[in-house]
Structures are given as C-alpha cells and as structure tokens.
Length: 265
Image (cartoon, rainbow, N blue to C red; front, side):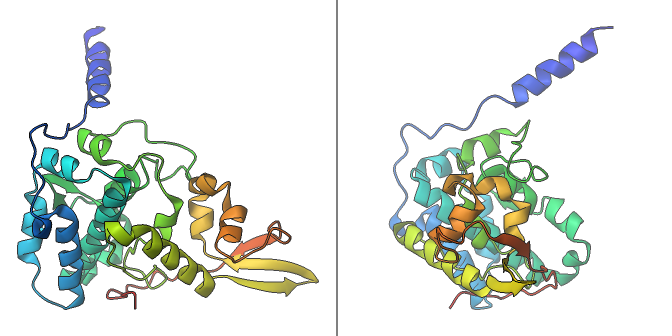
C-alpha cells in the first residue's frame, strides 16, 4: 500500500533535480549565428512583417547544452529570453489573433519551441525570466517544482525591470524593443523610465497627494525587492523623490485590448 506514495515522492524529487550542463568542448558559434542574434532577427523580421518561419525553426532546433554555453552572461540571458518571449507573443498572435479571445488559455498553452522545449508564455515568463516565481505569488512565492529546462535557463534572482520590457499582446503592454547584450543595461533602463513616465501621474485627491501608476507594481510587488521595494524603484527612476516616496499609491486600469505591433521607437 505504501509503494505508490513512495514512488510519487521519488518522481517529484527526481523532477526537481538536474539541469543541462554547458558542453565542455563547445566552440562558440559564429557571431552571425548566435542565439542572441537569432532572437534579434526574429523581432526584426516580425517588425518588417516578413516570413519568420525559418527563424522560428532555427530557434526550435537549438541544442540545449550549446544554448546554455552561449548564454554565459546575465546580459545575454536577459536579452535572449526577453526577445524570445516578445517574439513568441507577436508571432503567435499575428498568425492567429483569435488566440487572445481566451487569454488564460493562450498564456498557459505550450505553443512555441525553444531548443526542443515547447513552452507557454507563462512558463517562459515565470519559470525562466522571473527566475522561477509562482505566477500567483505576487513575487513572494517561488515555484515548488520546475522542469530541467527551466532550472537550466532561469535567470537567478530575477530582475524587476523585465516587467517593463515584456509585451503580452495587450494595448497597455510596454513597446517591444530589440535587446542586445552589449547595450542591455542602457536599453532596459531607458525602457523603464519611458514606460513609467507615460504611466505615472501624481494627483491631489481630497487634499492628499496620490500617485497613480501601473498595476504591474501590484501584480508583481515582491519582485521589486531587488530595488528595496516599489517606492524605492519609483525613486530610482525619477518618478518619486525621497521626500514624497511614501505617498498613497493607486493603480490605473490595464487595457487588455489586443494590439500587436507596438514597437519601441
């Protein structure tokens, strides 16, 4: 009678272990063929409304150990996965806009393959880009179980700035920028500032100052611990000051109307 629970425990334990190891004898790809360049070309093609099916196939056929070897810096990892996420969403919703009619199903359905792993937008965002966070945990609860692919490629510790770089196909999403490892820090900082300037406003309500800003801060509150919390994040990006950072915070409505093709200028 105890065999089934014991077997289940073993399976769960086994599933939580292991990851792809970078190939020891791996020689870096030609500069024109790196995963980061592929991710950039995918977005360039989508922006130019060209057929990107060959690029989608190349991304699907990447070898996991070689991909792990190529993504050997944090900037390479973040640039690659943000580009791939945005490319996946733009590609799928351009091919079939009706997928967005049921957003819950769209975000949870594996439909885009990277290095042999078919992934959903949720798996890519929460399992890899956010560093293995539970999508219902507001940034305070990690995933209890994850697969080998996610454990290999997750961005450890996350990066709260990614919330202003990921485009999920809705009108209120940040514009799609094509990120490059060499300029990643400058690009994403500029993208955060731009989005917050557009989506933050200080008003006086009943004699009290209130900041109205993006609900992304509410949905992923715990992620902003890397900047000592939401208030200090807003100070860092020039929306609030040390003197007024504790003002009451409210959130604007998020427009979930489907809108593909929002590109950074």
